[in-house]
Image 1 (cartoon, rainbow, N blue to C red):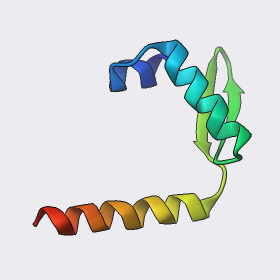
Image 2 (cartoon, rainbow, N blue to C red):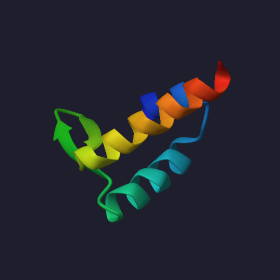
Image 3 (tube, rainbow, N blue to C red):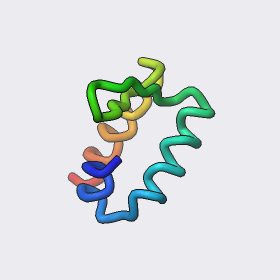
Length: 62
C-alpha cells in the first residue's frame, strides 16, 4: 500500500479503501509475503479489458 500511495501521490488510507473495494468486487487478490502485502488482478479478463482500454486511449492520442 505504501509503494502504491507514493507512486500515485495519495494517502495510504485512500489506497487501502480502494483496494478493499476492489477485493470485495473480486477484481484484485492479495497475498502476504513477509511483511509485505502483494496485490494482483484476480481475473485475467480484467487484465484484457485494461489492455483494450489502454490501446484505445493510445489510438486517440495519435
